[in-house]
Image (tube, rainbow, N blue to C red):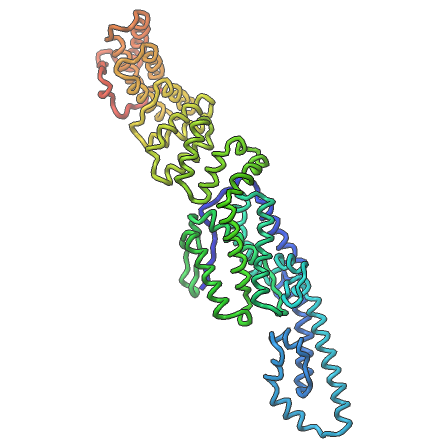
Length: 516
């Protein structure tokens, strides 16, 4: 069965994940330079050829003693060849006469076998895995660092880089580049320590970035535990598909699998460094929990990060805390923080969008409408035409009976008309008339009528006739209303068919466009 993560809900970061991409590039470059870009590397070919010479010679002389170090290299333990060929070697040795000449001949043969095994061991030492891998029995600081960038094949490399690509940029975005780079290195060291602890004295090199990446996975679980991850699965050749599952379920299951494999199979029975995965993940999980509990990220990292990103994060720590809370799945806390930020910065379209999106995730959009209405009015004054129209449409969709200041609605109507959104402009104009009340101010009523003269003559006539029937309207406003009404009636339809609409409830729900 194949189970492979291929994506998740998080899709954006605030800046380019330089550290993550740099690690990926380093792994690819070193993989190619080490000669492992082909199906079989030159190192492997040379080592196999030398080993084949040893086995060929030993098969012809099975009574000889083979070097223990060679056996460890090939079989993983000493005396493996003797266990496999011991009885046959004894039979062959018994066929030789016991005289003084034979031992000298055997000595020469043993020297030749030793020379061949020494050549294999020399090829091993020149092999990139042994030069740059982490060998518990021969620990080196160089190997501690370099093993994190070495890989044994394309599948090994691509699998690790895919996981790093899915998790790394988002932890780098929350923690910042320096802290993330240090954390990645320490995760790799923790993974190496776990591997050495359970493979003491082993001469088998460990290579690969998976231990360090496991640390990033542990941090991802802390910060993005609610995120749904998409997986591809394939059972056999015919049953395949995808499914989504939350990080809080799948990442602990993966860790449990690693523990089970490490305990049941053991270090010698598997070519996968399960304990390295466990050590890296445990370090990443514990480190991320500690930093979250101590407040290091919120108090120190994010303010400094805000300076480098060039946003207002440093001046608005509340917005920074909201972004962090939302990234960690604490949507209720993020909603409250964003509400506070939007009250103080109503013209900020990004904050408004984030606040509305968070409200939708919590199914609190109806509650969020008043604050969003205040924000969209501020944005209209600032001239954010695109954002204003987009947000207003969503507000109306969430609350069709939404009420707003008539003056604002008139400005919004003009904006929609200039953008060519005539149907939306007519609906907004109708809403402006309804929200103006039964007896709107004469100046406001004339503005509605003038807009309606082009957009919706029926609303214009209703407004003007209502204005003319009132006793509190100054004579100059009535004169202007009569003049405008005459123009509308003469152009739009014959006077005898026009009926006054004194009750706003009599306005039709949908009025066809008269003039476009």
